[in-house]
Length: 222
Image (cartoon, rainbow, N blue to C red):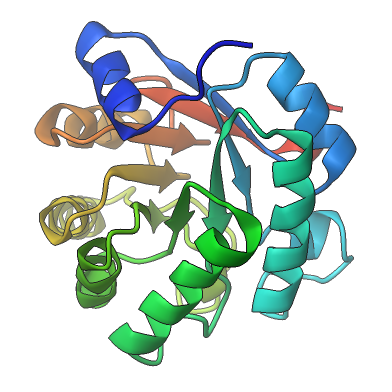
């Protein structure tokens, strides 16, 4: 196991064209295997609601759920860059609430960064978290916490108007101070355009290969 990657190393990987490999993990054994396999990053996703807890979606997941699973993952992967996923209503209420809950991931679970869903509508949250000295990743496209507003779990950005909106969201996330962006379930052509447009690392989950790396849900590998 080499040195744990940080923001600088991830930017250097983007600049050199080296792709990052990362995976979700929700427990100690999976995190142990992920670190042994040399994953660049681990996301403790709120997808644990569906994958581990049996919920129909991510909305019921609480901060306590995410913190507890993040603690287990950190114990299993002490030398891997780990990201805690801010669950529904942990950041939507106010900038202050967003900073408080983002900080909990660092203080209570030793996460290296946090992730939240949304583009322009959460730009102030991203800026507040970044201003507090916390690394924050944006997430646009299919955003499971708001899937009801998006018409369910389906691909986004497939028509010119929605594609333009996602491009605006991507730029807003970068401008607000996010260290990276995750695109979910958008056309590969749109992923490639955003990837080339942004200077921060851009990652994909079901959004095509033209980007800086792929995120895989651990259960999908089985």
